[in-house]
Length: 133
Image 1 (cartoon, rainbow, N blue to C red):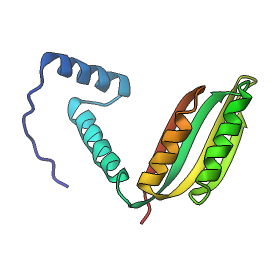
Image 2: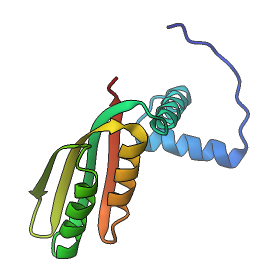
Image 3: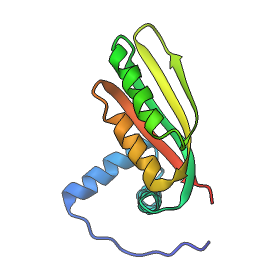
């Protein structure tokens, strides 16, 4: 695909933030970072529709909080038609890494991820998915 050039006007604060993003993310230039951000935005907009997608939800939490595991299990039972597999890995005595492999309509996977990552005590949560239809 041929690249097209165009000009972009940004205020100084936004340009500074873009340059910091380029450096911290390891992009070679602003164009590469902008392409990534635009493509990410397009993909995320598609997630709000009824496309069939597949992916994973990754959650990290303090395993001394025993209520978190039971909350994860309860939510996953409500979405059991979407979950292909679910695993827990004990990274050390303090942290647990929980992964769920999922497939279904994008808006439902997003709803499941939002519910899981919103559990009080979750240290980090992320949904990664791509179109599967």
